[in-house]
Amino acid sequence: PGATRRRDSESLYMHSLLLAAACVMLPTHLALHHINPARAAPPRMGLFDSLREAAREVTVQHILVSKQADALEIYDALLAEGATSEAVSKVASERSLCGSARKRPDAKLAQLRGKPGELRFRRGSMDPEFQRAAFEAAPGTLVAPFRSQSGWHVMLVNE
Image (tube, rainbow, N blue to C red; front, side):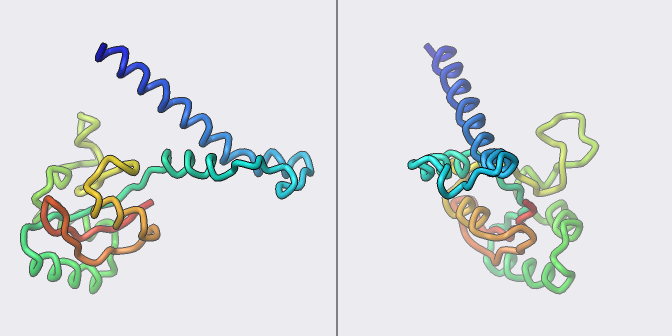
């Protein structure tokens, strides 16, 4: 039963990705064929938008600390340095309590490969506060310190 459920879940996930891809490609297809999208849009476009949003991933770098004062200090220092990905990587590898801080670009294991503090995820897979901060901020934004169940975070939204 567990294998069947996993297979069904994977199948549903793949179908939702295909639908999301179709939603992304539809405007280009309509433009190539000189079709007015306002007249050609399906009546339930809200469903397609929901599927596209569900499939959307965000990539962030974050620093997890236990105290609000530490998070504020890190945030101020990163703002002063220009809040670059490199600066966040440096601070994450030095001060973050999260395992993602041990990531390296040349790591052999895929789970450890990337920038220090980097996470990539979809809606529904993270702590609600962490998720909200990541999805509401524009790429390139250094998010002010916020608290989750894990502690205090400073986050840079990469994409």
